[in-house]
Image 1 (cartoon, rainbow, N blue to C red):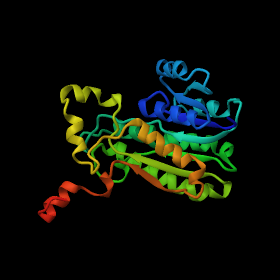
Image 2 (cartoon, rainbow, N blue to C red):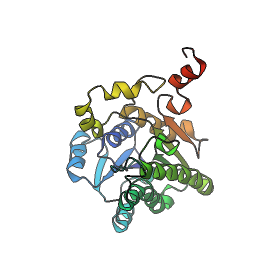
Image 3 (cartoon, helix red, strand yellow):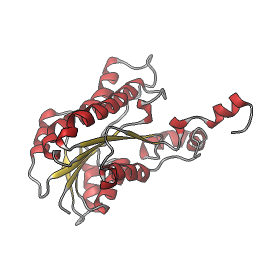
Amino acid sequence: MDATAVVTGAAGDIGRAIVERLLGDGYAVEGWDRDASRLAENDAAFADQGYASRCVDLLDMSAVADASAAARDYPVRLLVNNAGGVTDAVTLKTAGEADFQRDLDLNLTAAWRCLDRLRNDLSGGGAVVNVASINGMGVYGFPGYSAAKAGLLHLTRFAAVELGKMGIRVNAVAPGTVRTKAWDSRLENDPALFDKIADWYPLKRICEPADVAAAVAFLAGDDARMITGVALPVDGGLTAGLDRLASDLCQAEI
């Protein structure tokens, strides 16, 4: 354990899975989140494993600057920009300016801010993995969130090209639907919702947080040392194509 991984949004389901995976891979992990109570759950779950929490509001420039400059036992060699969120603005018609701006701030500006502050720490062999979304690749509702994730994917490519000379690799994962607590209220209204959604995916199943964490760990690790500037879908084949549509078009079961 001679390297620190900073994981933003560490208190959520996906963030916690990423923390657990990276601890298992030998990193000292620093989890950033604004939810102090859920960070305390991380502290209890990962006690004596090389984990430390830091309560940080990524929308506060000063807070990010202070957290980035904090003393730590091991240098930061990995940044996982996992923090994000989505407003209730499902369509352009329902997306007000405040909702749109908040989606951009949470899902794009916050990631840029962390990368900007930790760039020098990562120089000479560090890596960045941005947690984007298939919403950044196609139209699946939520215009502000989708636009922000599309921006994050382009920021990934831009940073990979510009920071390559510093020895920094920058990649992204793009999950599809992930089974997290964020779906709980909708599942209460429709317990069969995941079954319906899974039918759109070629693999006919819903992604788990551990699946996202595994993809992050791969892109962060030495096996991906020649990979930079890519977006790895973790989506059960959704962005590859729709078997239901193919069957209808071909008038044959695909």
